[in-house]
Image 1: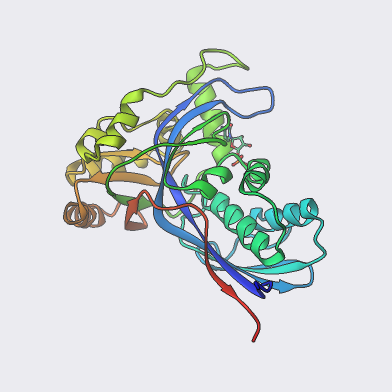
Image 2: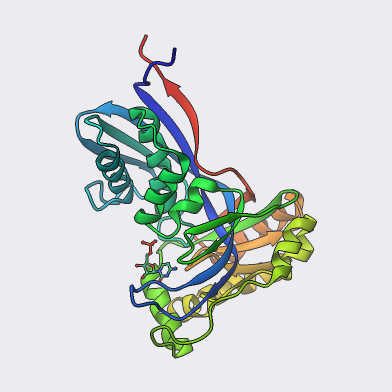
Amino acid sequence: MTATPIAVQVRAPGKINLALRVGAPRPDGYHPIATVFQAVSLYEDVVATRADGISLEIHGRGEDLPVDATNLAVRAAVLLCETSGTRAGAHLSLTKQVPVAGGMAGGSADAAATLLACDQLWGTGLSRDELAELASELGADVPFALTGMSAMGTGRGDLITPVMSRGTYHWVLAVQDEGLSTPEVFREYDQLQHLDLDDGPAPRLDDAVLAALLSGDPIQLSRQLGNDLQEAALELRPELGDVLAAADRAGALAALVSGSGPTVAALALDHAHAVSVAGVMRAAEVAKEILLVTGPVPGARVLEHVHSR
Ligand code: C5P
């Protein structure tokens, strides 16, 4: 017999967009995109404990983020509570590794981890598809944080198709002190491209990026990396040019802005090469932090169920 747990711990990953193609804005304010996501080994951990009402505390990065109903983790718990009709509550203890407002979907990972943790805590009986639907209501990047590994994202980025990938890729991340606002980067993109509502072709991915992932060869993948939002992020944060140049000088296979930035991801051949690239980039003092991560890694998953004795 499985008793309901009194606490559940769930871990969800951050992501890098290996390729990101963006179309013209839609009437709802979103842009159609075609992207390939890779989940990487920076994690958001949520421990959900039985409690009255919904409350949140934050550890690690983002300790000064709001913990009220505007926080996406709280919104995720409230949405699941309303949808499932449960009368239970939860206290959420969130430990963040993913840079805040860094273009790596940390807030989306918080929401995905919270959905899964509260689902288990409350025994809602919702299917994974139903959770994915709630995820997409919460934000464009939340469904991918549930799925993880490597996947294509279409629509707003929320329609997820898993893709095959061989091997492990080694990345050096340059994390900035100050984040960038995703809507602002999209607006800058529209201005740079002179885009109006529904104007222009639908975004399309080049199949070569999928072939490169299948090959398991980082050199092949490095030739396929690309981000339509990079120019807009550089316009808003010109110093990112120095970060990209430092990655190049450090011998990275390629480097690009992750999502809407400002985190820069530099691809290395293997772990030893990543350590060497990271050393040179650290010495260049172009970022607040230089981190080593690998991908792909799984999406949101339960680490622990705690039962009362
Ligand atoms: O869905 P999420 O809340 O993460 O999106 C934040 C904002 O980023 C949106 O309100 C929109 O301005 C912008 N966005 C977009 N097109 C997308 C994803 C996000 O314009 N595909």
